[in-house]
Image (cartoon, rainbow, N blue to C red):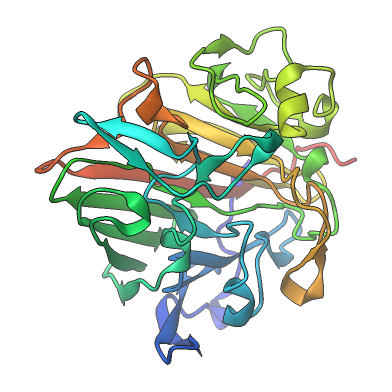
Length: 373
């Protein structure tokens, strides 16, 4: 394996740092900025104030050919129609909450139910207008990054408390793209901020991600009901198609006769990461054809692996490419889905005076030894 260094010769040294520009103007007249982060090796990431979205990530393959490895859109007008959460920072609670209901400190709360897998309504990714659909305020940092800020008002989407949130993207010279979230609230609330980029390491979204090779640092997963809500059980992956403890081709067992896969139409579940202090490895995904490798590190207890099963060819993305089933995958580090309704899950409660933090790191390399199919 090799780091993606020295990709550009001395005479073609990339302009490093943060470049800030106007992306577009919203229908209400608000201006939206876009920021381009470039490191010394030529890696490039673009992020925008709308939705604190990761617009694109450009990295080379084993031959040095650079491509964008994310799904999304070419213009802000299209991002406004984003129903698949491409590249988004989602919240106040990412993933699902059964029936949109939870009880906190003796009070019952009802959130919007904006998703209905298996005919079972739930609250998904913060509701009808979650953090992915609001305008953040962005400013460059002194570490080749951008900090986005947003304050969600008490009662917004049904959640209690005024929540102050900062999300920071940083691109390092070690070819790491860091996504870091921090939040405080003036009252007790629930929180699970999640980053939701769809990746296709081939750089060609007309190709399926089922030939990618995945490893998950997890011995257990959370089984769900037909509505994709965790049952409360924590099941071992050994002997099941959910076992990615060793490098496994994603498409090898994705359509196996297994209840969890039937409910999700493929992989769309939370894996319980092995315990450890601080930021640790959660997942490794590699594309044998291009040689691109992405490792994901986090300080969270779970990772949601979603194989793009609900992409159905109705969305046109970058370059007018139609995004078909399994043309992208998500690896969302997170707290447990529906945690407020399961006392045996890690708590999702944030109380006044506390600070919520979530670190997610994507590290990009190439591997010349990956087999080519």
